[in-house]
Length: 289
Length: 190
Image (cartoon, rainbow over all chains, first blue to last red; front, side, top):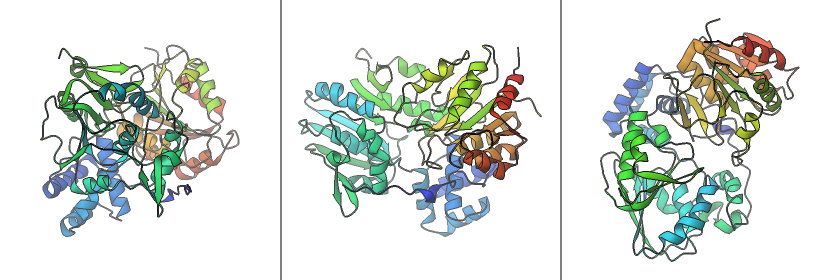
């Protein structure tokens, strides 16, 4: 399989530009965005949302707060483009290979014996974790598995359904793939079609797609696994606690929560979930809770 | 120069020895938190912190997201995350796009540190083979922080110091040993 080297020159230094919005300017912009899109970013991590707004301004040649507000209101496509910039996807499959190896070797063989398995990918902005997981279960009987995918927008759901990855995705994932057990390389995983790539899956279960506001819909003890990796890093501490409490409550007893390697759980959650192994960011809901 | 409360050091190719020399000279009671943002391979996670810890009398650790920055600690940006510094002196992490082919990006750490903590920050750029750190160091200077660049003549690879000097016009251009001495002299004993 031929994979071109990635030229990401186009993003060099743009993520850090010389635009420097004040807290007040950012507040105005976010209030306007909330009015137009319904998304409230005021409880996001300050540096993250500031950087995404400034990145968006840089990309679209917008020089000031007032110019941005004007163009967001004038253009029918601008609000959508803004959301795409904020809800980016990491582009990397099999991130933290040790987590996927642990799933394949320890968790999936035990879980697969259950009659019905519900798996949730809340707050989905990309397809990377979903298809990484589908690949890891390729050799198991998957008929009893329901995969619930909650997208942030309809556009994200459409993209997820396509199972199409670019040369950049493959290149970014190469190192991770080299650390997966029993995998020789990217040729084992991707099918190449007209310079695009698909993941070979053998999934026989059911997909349930939905677009909704993560913070408005609550699930109670419904899922065997919830993938919520590197989502809470974008929230401020209060919103993070709210999100964590929500995903923990959505787990069945004995269910698993997967978070990012450098995301920590809080004291409240520690009473309900327990890390399965030191150094692996997978937590199991205690059965007596 | 204002009272420096946080030190952020960015380095890439050729900077590891400078960092290990610094850590080996830090006294056990060194108070100012030091944040190291070093370019590293994303898939090699174990061994890096351990290797640096063996040289240091001060605890060396990779922070978790939203962890508070405390005194008498050396922090290292985790592999494959950008490390940002927030105004309430906590870390936040990000998996956004690579900057200058790097995650962690020195530019992001220096820029957020400068813009969040302003004149409390000392930013340092060491040896390296790309231009990461130049823009971020300038943001520290613009925000009133103090800036130092390793002398290109002293650096193993001078691309990064050259770029930082061109972008920032730093307060000081020092050799690696002078940088270490400067940092040691800042120690605040409480």
